[in-house]
Length: 84
Image (tube, rainbow, N blue to C red):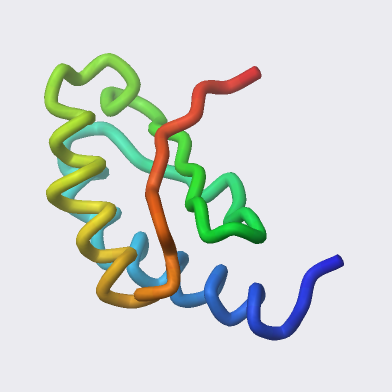
């Protein structure tokens, strides 16, 4: 069940990602928000060149995670997930 509070976090995370996307897309990559768990874990999936980029770990921590935590301080962690 999705609550109004979780939708709000989801929306704020999406807005933070929207600010980062142009930089990823400029290099042929992108990122998709897969889900925000009830315990505050944001799961992202890299796309395009970001999947094979050796700097994607740094991008996750220094770029995406910082932007997300600024927009949604209640988020505990940001993780990269692989397609199933």
